[in-house]
Length: 321
Ligand SMILES: Nc1ncnc2c1ncn2[C@@H]1O[C@H](COP(=O)(O)OP(=O)(O)OP(=O)(O)O)[C@@H](O)[C@H]1O
Ligand SMILES: [Mg+2]
Image 1 (cartoon, rainbow, N blue to C red):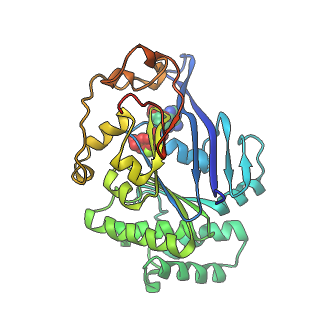
Image 2: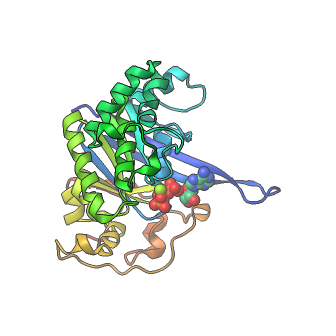
Image 3: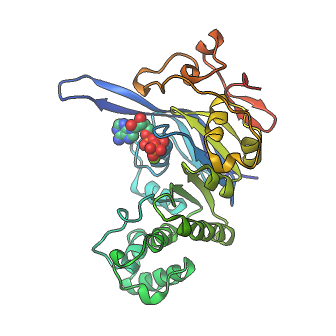
């Protein structure tokens, strides 16, 4: 099957200046990320805070530039953001859209709900207000919001309803890929399931592909077909959902799963004891970035380690087998 999204050897650095007279330093936020996403499928992205999940989302939505590597979205290749035309951007945003974590901050408080939802369509297609409003109302109904609510403002909605508004807005241009960056973590647990079910229904109905970023491993396990595990800007394990959850291979994946109670109950799993501190991205060790915390570490971990195939997964280390 053709992939709707492909990322090849992507690197991203932030230039950081600590103090006005300080030298600029580079923070390697993403290092050699490669992944593939098929139409109608979900790739779950997991990893501790700061490992680069949102940075990946920002590069994919052209908010941040990449340093090297490429992204192929529905056959269109992005190599660098320098000199890309407005037309390129417009086409890109018609294919990929993002739903943000915080439905309280991501909606303009001064706009009516239908205007918020219609906005991408008005900007992109120059539609009349009347037509855009009608389309927004149809989309509201699709995400489970009554059309009578169209004239209201965001503050008049609950968290779950606001997230439905965010989803409706992201879908207005009928994109093929949605990036969901912690889409339910700001919501009450009871509402999380409703929003997740809506996302799954919409995916089936519109053949959407999802990049689903979350800290909550049980949520990721529920919605994903494939799982990508990141550690300090690198992919350490990448494979089918059940393979990763039932037979985790990288010591870091084992550690993550062992510390997630809900996921753990389903499988008796060998616990790995983690020691040491997370290194800083400013001062990464040579070789494996996880070696300072890993019980399996030895001298060989100081050389660069490539991904290798093990059963159906790709994994950066096979010492824990
Ligand atoms: N605009 C920026 N300028 C400089 N450094 C940044 C910037 N944005 C993020 N970073 C750094 O890049 C690294 C990756 O951050 P990112 O937000 O992508 O992590 P994350 O995996 O999304 O974390 P979380 O789970 O907390 O959302 C972190 O070290 C972060 O401090
Ligand atoms: Mg983030």
